[in-house]
Image 1: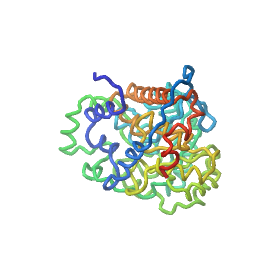
Image 2: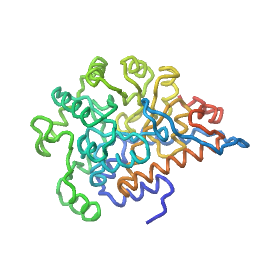
Image 3: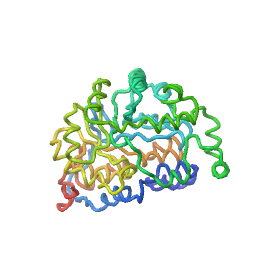
Image 4: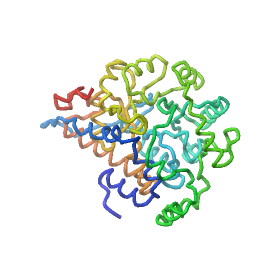
Length: 385
């Protein structure tokens, strides 16, 4: 077993242990990948301010998200097909998040269902919802989420039409994979993954199959999914879904100040600044570049979270310094899941926590609530916008 010191170590191990189509599904951007790359590169341009001769013995990363105590300002983002990265992947990720004291967000497009995760963890979690045309399915899945103990809805706004991801098309990616000759060869080269998949019954979209009308097979599912993303979505529909849910809502997919102001006015409880990890509109700005202007647009007190590009504790702190209250991570924990299952997710969270703690100390700060623009080099305080 290699020594794991950073998220990149988990990524390399993930790539070796998971069939290519499912690794590529995670590690891909839309079209040329320019926004995917900018999400990382723009973090590198922001410099931290090192401070010395300060008493940093008693440090604290604990805070709250939507009023919920968390051990650090971080949540696991919704990632589809986690159960194809590792058998029963959503359950393993949720258990790791629970042990680490951070929120886990289940994707609509998960292999494990709401009920599976609720039964396996016995703990509250968050649920991500796409805006779908099937009103009966929407009503049903919201009720199922309530029964499962979901405490917050993460409503995704930036996937009413899917951006083109070249690798997914070239790999002819499906879940479960079609048993073509190239796929059979790839699966045979990953025997640990294959044996694990043979040992689970959760190999299709658990929140959809058997719940959506007429969806009983892979063919039904692909057809239903293609028709369901609702291109008619507008702010009135967003407000309607918020009312239907009746509990805390985070609006995900905001990357523009005008949209942020409108989102705040819907009555949502928080905004997640996100460009879907660079998987939707290629050529859009990175989220860290957009963040300062969005913070100014919604005011200093409105809860604001950020995802896309965060693969280190330092990047998480840079986002917090520029106005985020907390961050979501997706690829970072998914690499861990594909590499080592629940232990890998736990390792990813431990790495991010350690990097945040040490970086905060070297910046001369004891409490996460005090990590602000003054912790960045003067030229970088809000100039990412």
